[in-house]
Length: 340
Image (cartoon, rainbow, N blue to C red; front, top):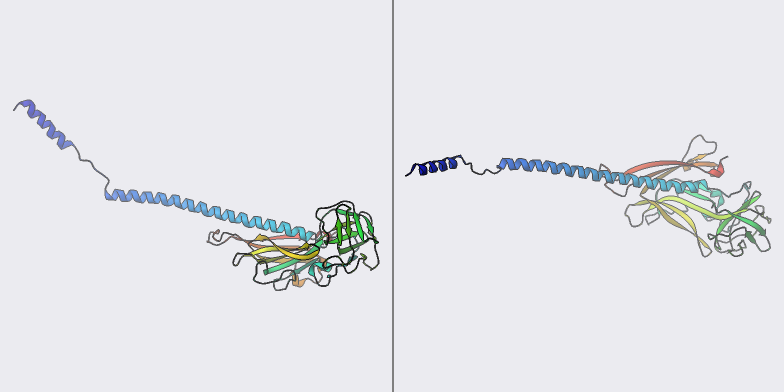
């Protein structure tokens, strides 16, 4: 054997001895890598869930805040207009509605009247049905709408008011109030003509009708002067009622008058959902503080109303305790026609 071949075989043996076999990950290394991966994934999931919960909470807070703002704005408008006739008529109001002694909305003496949670409200019957009063205080308000209509002339012979302008909101059979500095009257219109710009006040006129066509507080005819104000009567009642289609749900409702072809009735509109309670206090002139409805001795002397609403989020898991977000809001409104 040649020396060259011997040397070559030796080199091959040395190379084979020096070559290291391929080495993979051990079981321990794989377990450590999996653990680290799980920690990273857990952190990502934790951040995602925290952000998701934060989103639900912020969304729920925005929902209850928007609901409270909507409720207070609408209620405040009705409270400010309670007892409003548009004129300083010295308190002389001729109410000739035939049902002024039986219907809550026809009794001008109840321009503002509250009911405690344990008191029956004639405008909002209690019960378990949708829209029926379920809990909390309620508030009844009557006044004139801010229509901006005025009288051109008043004719006793034809029992017609001729207006300076026309309005698409007026219908025959509307309950209306007219006033000037000397007198005011509540009646149901017997007719309305947008072409002639006339409103009739004959008797009877639809349902409930008028007990008289003499619109004078003393029972004698009174002629309303030029530019006397005339408007539709608004009568509302605010209360907490059962939400339709939602078991145990509660909403803020508003009762209002509707004119069904001359027949006056009331209907309840759901205004804000998830209002679970309403507490109302009143400031009577001469008193030092607000009091509940049961403490008021003269509703005509109430000058301000303090309303406290409890609202709940629709999402039942919006809170950090996996419960709905609940907030209590309070707002105070002055009856602007009862203060100097």
